[in-house]
Amino acid sequence: MLKNSKFQPQAQKILKDMGRFADELGISVYLVGGAVRDALLGKDPSEMDFVVLGNGVEFAEKAYSKYGGHGLVRFERFGTASFFLADRKLEFVSARKEMYEKGSRKPHVASASLEEDLARRDFTINAMAMGIQEPHFGEIIDPFDGQKDLQLKMIRTPLNPFHTFSEDPLRILRAARFASQLQFDIAPETLQAMKEERERLRIVSQERITDELLKILSHPKPSTGFRILQQTGVLELIFPELASLSGVEQRNSYHHKDVFEHTLKVVDNIAKVSDKLQLRFAGLVHDIGKPVVKRFIEGVGWTFYNHENIGERMLKRICTRLKLPNEYLKYSQKLTRLHMRPIQLIGGHVTDSAIRRILVQAGEDIEDLMILCRADITSGNPKRVQTHLANFDWVVQRMKEVEERDRLRAFQSPVRGDEIMAVCGLKPGPLVGKLKSKIEEAILEGEIPNEHDAALEYLLKIKEEIIHAFSNETKKGEIPNGEEKDPV
Image (cartoon, rainbow, N blue to C red; front, side, top):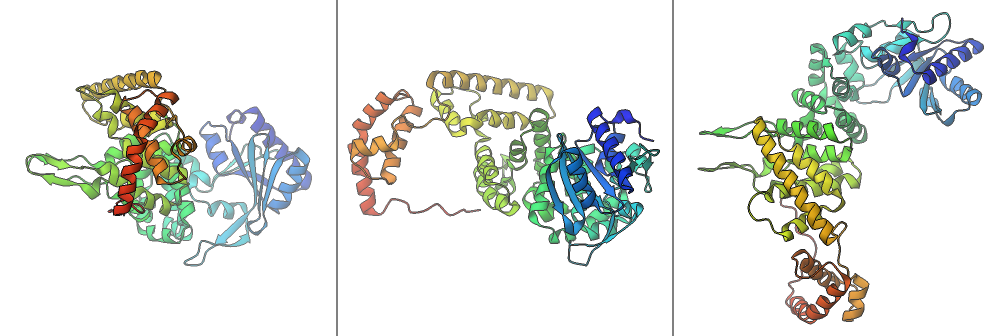
């Protein structure tokens, strides 16, 4: 029996209303899946799924009209419909069983009993139902011992795991996701089936795979899910560049730490201080170029020179394959390219010019860059960690001083392109950009202040020389045409 106190008053009212409405219509309706699981864990569910022993779409439409819902969506083919009541999403589905053909994720659907419907679900902890009608309100229907697995903190399939994953291979990723979300273990037979059925993931759309990866990233400790994907060989299939970070090599007395494990620590460190998914993704890929440039140099040891620039270039292919939004690409490229820069500002004499450059290059993402840099400190030596963090505090303070003095946030030339064209008698083209860059360079180097009049005066001083040099370069064919080919 589930105590009513597990639900907040609003959720309690919704359940009571749906139960009374089901009685009025003379049909049976049950709360199922994640809402039951969360309630048993003492969490108030934000979404509620209901199984209807009858027509789920019809029940949803009538409940929608009766209780003043909004955002009704119907999926007639699968017998499902959903709408929002207040701020909670309610989804209704006709009790069904599903049969899959080999090589397809599109099921043949047939009506079923409640137990048959629960049997088709992914894991025992999601294969429970709760009565919402009197006199059985709050009673738990648990044919696959989901409550026991909640107590054991175990992810297990209700049926044979090979059958479960073969039918719907996306459940392989969902197992890792729930393990990460709940910090549960995966039952040995379920883990083995994940390994052996992983090739079935090739029939799953990239969008759904990426969605699960981002959900793993969204949880408080993403490393749990990614470590499971690595252990089962799934990561090599869906994200080979990340999987290739794993491993430690030693030559003579030199060894390098496992970059994969380091990366997971970085992501977990970010997750402790930021919910921003793009930043967590940047942490996941910031060292992605290291396997490409890894070299052993006698007397020096293992090196990863230029891995940040190589990683930046790799990300275009990675983000395109993962079908991530373009803002993920631009953002992760920027942070990957710049993540080594702040540490280079530590020690010795650091010029204002160097500070200006990192501020301008990072722009509005400077705080995120510094979160990544701090998270990148994964040494097991507490004193070393403390020293590095103190150094970064010093860098941040220098940044604040320079930024306040020079007004560099969202920096660009105070003399804009249209004014450059008017002053120099030019038409739109690469020469305008070259003159604008020269002004910006002079400001960053501290030659002129970040002010319009000073920048205009500087333009008037250099324009003839730059225009003449540009003309000569054009005649010689030295102006580059197109981007440099990606060497990776």
